[in-house]
Length: 147
Image (cartoon, rainbow, N blue to C red; front, side, top):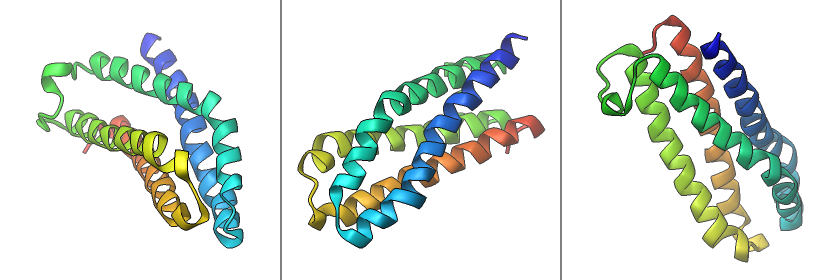
């Protein structure tokens, strides 16, 4: 039951995180690019962050707890020794890339975002979205024993 509750919390949080980025990528990003209007992206960011960032934190924490429940402890991370270890390791690598992109966006990209910088923002948004979708697909592989 414990694992199932973790899974539900993980899936709900991932739904918010990935769904928000899909919505941003598919709905708002094209409009911002077409109109060269950075306020569309900034307004979405300001509204999404209060629920998106906690969702990401919940996803990370529940993911780690579920990995431990599968006996993929810290010492097995990045071992790539079994199917589930491979999934956990790849998801952790993708998480680290996501964190790097988030730090770059928060410190360097969004504070000085102009219409000229919009393609860079678009690239980051698309990368984070694709990484989120990849993490969802990888997570679904746990059910069949991993990679």
